[in-house]
Length: 163
View: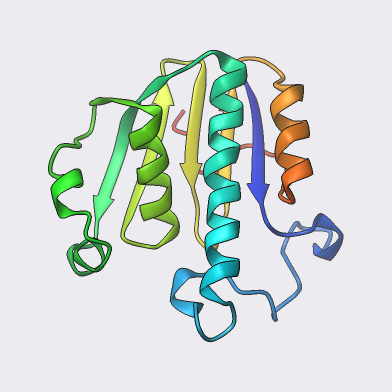
């Protein structure tokens, strides 16, 4: 399985242990209006959502399964997502559109989830706008698309991968 870390963080600003060193960078949806404008936040969020789509397109996938899900009720309500999430559960097969909605909610700290399709594909979310994507093949076209969008794609095992 190939695995990548997909982020908005330029690897040039990492130390030898991989820690990101620019403490001026915004890292969370709660910083909208403080460290980042809503417009910049939404553009960045859309790049992450598009990255998932690029990898799924290259893998020929239109759906995947929710394999982990946690919700924070107050944040879910703030995002007006209660109704949509009432139809989502661990093990449910969901189409790309719902995967994109889950990604947005995760990036906005309303939920946390892991998405996968058999042993061929996964999306895991970490803290501070870290996203991990795994695929059963190299996905060079997706990597190129995501990189051109402004995100960085680095070979990296997901710390959220179960053995």
